[in-house]
Image (cartoon, rainbow, N blue to C red; front, side, top):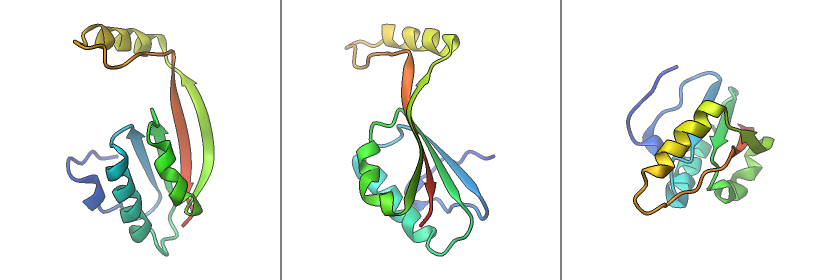
Length: 114
């Protein structure tokens, strides 16, 4: 595993099987650009790309890409007690109460089938 700081749209996927973990990383415009870049990069590639998408607020952006994606999971994953405590601390420090917290995260898992 490696972590790369850079433009996700310009990142070259490694050869071989790959797992992309997305924790609601982008708004819809960037997510669309990322999916277009992956579509080009994965054309004719035999190695799979799995996408684990947590807090999947841009799930609707995946709709047009579904010809290239197979859904593996869509649902809610309960948070651990430690995560719930950490989230509560974060929420309590928000000046405008921008986000709310729940005991779960909406998640999806996709496999790129191109």
